[in-house]
Length: 497
Ligand SMILES: *Cc1c(COP(=O)(O)O)cnc(C)c1O
Picture (cartoon, rainbow, N blue to C red):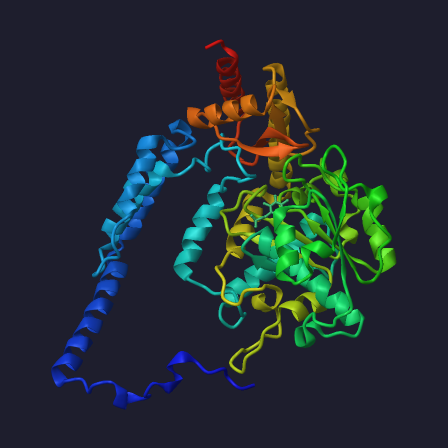
């Protein structure tokens, strides 16, 4: 292929274009380079920045239980410390950490605590943070086994653990990605590759122009990242056959159209508002029998499959072809931890492959073959650490606690005069007040209180408050304190002015 002309093509090329450096400037340059290296070596040898980071981090952790969940106005104003000009010369790590901690820490949201209920954002388990610190220092790139044998092994083991824990077929492979957004993208890319390959069409070479049309079938309440993946893959939102949902946001299985081998059916384990699960037992076998591909978006809900108590919610989901799930939600790993799972390795690798003369594949497993990215963070370390820290029984207990606290929250809100809107089957609670204005006012007052934080949504055309119980740290007392903040806000809203 010929390279398109670039703007600089006409410019003179080579060393002749630049003025010849004087001997003095060559010496200056070598001196600068030696000084920069010496400074970095000294920072690494001295280690005071690392100790300082640990000290500051420990102080942050210790303050979590007593601090505001959302920062106050002073803390937010303090963020102006970051609005500095790009420095001409570098600063020492201690100074960098001082600014980060003094301006940054007070304006963070207390995600690590038990009263943050926004956006299905979990906390991080202690072992995952500690393991991440160590792995950060390793600075490994899990693209290829030959780049990092350690990460190669950890990814392979974690892939097996995920398969076993979620009860997925033996042939299931995993890609360790940044989150469900990319895990959904990867699953649907595999679906697209397989459906077109079955029709004799190589989508990688031929693209979509002139390709046999594919069908995408999804519930009206599919997550926004499902739509994004449909957009990115050129499948076209206008081509999606949207299926009506029931009062809990589940796809109406009786309204799912007849499927065929060009169909990609997208189901949901955990509706982002209600936490409801689609009827996999009815739909997955139907899709299989029709030769269709099923993807399950299980960002936070697929962990139900890892438990005895909630496994009934995902019954039948193992008959899907691909699944997406996050470590950073229900499992409480640090952020940037999603998993794409696929029972069709050829399709996943086919869709995400890349090549280059310099790439050295291993006979075992190469991480980049099952992810859209090439270079990545060593994020499987945190997933491995979370599963090591909890074990099967700990996952069961953690998910159970999220559910029981969500139930307690819903009961508390109902008793305080809120209207609760969903069956609490997992960790999600929705509630509203008399009208949209009151709901909005109460939600903002709760957010301002600093006691807890919950966000809003629209449910059946009206404003609702959305509570996601997603942290290992949440206690029943945290729930009661938070419910009391909701009750006080409702009281204040209804008190005559
Ligand atoms: C959070 C979420 C996503 C997106 O996940 P990210 O990890 O934020 O990319 C997709 N689907 C559902 C149901 C979610 O809850």
